Structures are given as structure tokens and as C-alpha cells.
Length: 124
Image (cartoon, rainbow, N blue to C red; front, side, top):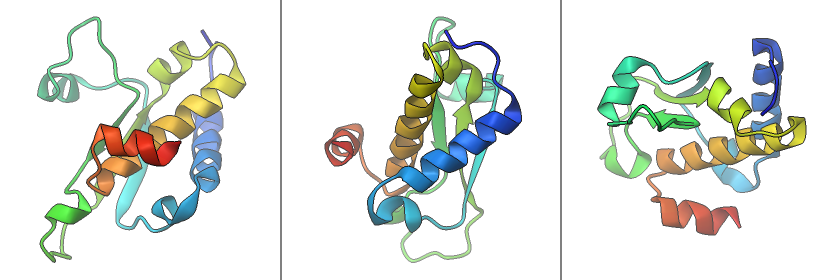
């Protein structure tokens, strides 16, 4: 488990991860806030029906592109990365960076309306 990581370092690593993602998928997202929190809040946990022994690395909240039906006046979508679960799953800073990158890619995939199988296929 990785020891303490400041919010400033986490933010910098998140921006680095976003810049490192391949292809146009990451570069073409728009109207999406990428934020972070220490952990999922009670409302998020309840909505996702997470048990006490389950956690979450990231969460996409919004209307995926294929389901917008041409609407352009929507509130910004939101991708939240959860710092403490990501750090807990990381043995060192390099694994932490990779976990952030992987999670960010996964949540961007949901923005594009992709399911888990397709996200994994595109990542490889």
C-alpha cells in the first residue's frame, strides 16, 4: 500500500495520466469535469449498492454521448477519481500512476457509452 499522497501530487498525476492516454478518445472529451475525492461518498455508495467491503477507484456520472439524442444543453458530466482506494491498491508510485491512468481511461470509456468489455479491448 502506498503511503500518503498529497492532493497536489494526485492532481498532477491525474493530469499526467490524461495527457498520456492514446488516441483521440481522451483528447476529444468535452464538457466533462475531472475531479477527485478521497473516497466515494455515502450517496454514491448507496446508488451503486456498494457493500462495506467494496470500494471504487473511479466513477463516471453523466449522459454518455450515444444517449444524448443531439442535446447540447446538458450539465457537465463528471469523472471522479478516488485517491485513497487507488493508493491502497498501489505498492509504489509507478503502480499508483498506472492505476490512475487505467481508471481514468475506464471512466472516459463510459463517457463514450462503452461497456466494460469494449473498454478493455480498446485499452489493449
